[in-house]
Image 1 (tube, helix red, strand yellow):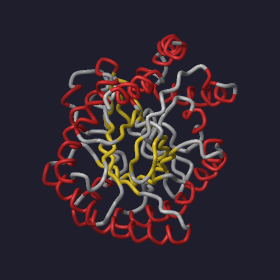
Image 2: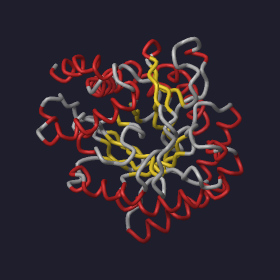
Image 3: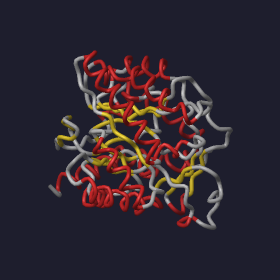
Image 4: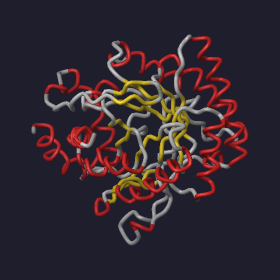
Length: 347
């Protein structure tokens, strides 16, 4: 298939570059290619609709947040055939993120470590990019907008940042994701604690209802959580999600553990580890959440998907939809089609 062949030829060159340099080369190149009909080269998945959060997704395979933090490449990424695209994480104000180098490949483990730190141009620029995309203008598909807090915002005022971003992105989102699980913003994961989470969700839910009344449109809000949580914390999170009538949970973000990559080059780098080593960790969280939640709200599974079989394992664990990121870096756009085909066949 042309897209698989092309990526196979391009990958050795891309992997010879610094990981972030390759990222910054590929996305603008994809944008230019999309303008000249990239979608015609990439085979598209079959229509396989799934109803989740009251939204009809054309297929259950999505792009995870982080690849396009500023929403500047939505049209290019849409050409890959995703059932939904999530962009961000965006913060109220622009921030440079952590010092470089801050992204490292671990090819022996099919993994990446990043400590980017929510580098983005701020929510106003983000919204401008979203509005400018054909994907948004022509209502071509499902768009998730992922929000976070600025690094210099005290953790006790984090909710203010989330509410500010929620108000800004709400009119343009199919759904909004609240990211409280990145390991690269100091103390952010404290928001997963019982009392902190309860306070945050209470304010988010009240704001969501106000915005729904104002815009006469209900936009679902999902919470993205970490893989590095114990069973008791999973129970607390599930209880809070149900009590506050949240719309979905995304499991999971990157891990801070290094058990699966010990001894490999870059394994000691600080940051979040993604890719194959997080596969079982995220599946364990999905299974535990499903046991607590039942059908009260859906789970979106992400973490370590490198094949159609991996995508099916997420669904078997209890997810309703899946998202890709690191697997896409290693395998290219053919992975989207493979995962969508596997999930379509298994129905």
